[in-house]
Length: 84
Image (cartoon, rainbow, N blue to C red; front, side):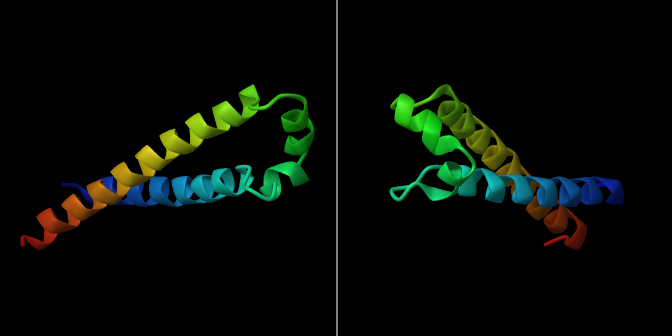
């Protein structure tokens, strides 16, 4: 496989790692979490489970799947390059 494939996966892995960290921190926890600090507490007090929280769940799962695919892709690329 070409080297640009690995570089693309590494860049994608860094971007998805930052996004995944941000999305997880924005989730509402038992104590309110960081989402209430950024205004999520107001919308969640009006409605039990808002559309924003559901979309945040979907985005977190989607970014997590892409992150996992990057990890597996890099592992396979390294295995093919080393020849184990």
